Amino acid sequence: MSNKNSNPFTNEEIVKQDENVEAQAQQESEEDNEEQTDKSNDSDNELQKKFDALNQQYIRLAADFDNYRKRQEQERENLLKFGTENALTKLIEVLDNFERANKALENVDDCEKVKESFTLLQKQVFETLSSLGLEEIKAIGEEFDPNFHEAVMQTPTSEHPEHTVIAELRKGYKMGDKVLRPTMVNVAASE
Image (tube, rainbow, N blue to C red):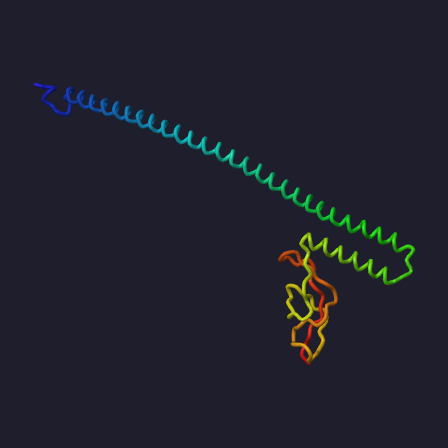
């Protein structure tokens, strides 16, 4: 007698039960995958929104910085332009005085008057430049400083300490801490 149910390997009920378990497991796995995909899509959408917001913020910040840079450049140009304008306005007055002096000296034979007029004009020029920030660099009697002085001569002497400026050959000028032109000097050297 052959009984199908007696063979555990061919039992249809067990095979069906296994198939049902496998189908249920596969269905649960698919549901889990769908749920994970939905969560992943939600996460991706959230990250994309954050990225877009940050990207827009970056674009606005870059545009703001570019505008700031352009404003600074314009302000710098205006400062230079109006600074030069101020200096030229002050120097025009000096130029006017040179013209007046030239006309006044046409009929003057006295050299003392010419010398006096020249001295007044020189003083006015220096005062105008000083009001713009120009300073004369002190040299004679000072210790030689390569930041402010340019040594073009050395004279052996025992009258002055070594490395002391004994003569000024050309005046030097500075504006604040910036040297515009160093003073050309003669420096004492040991005999």
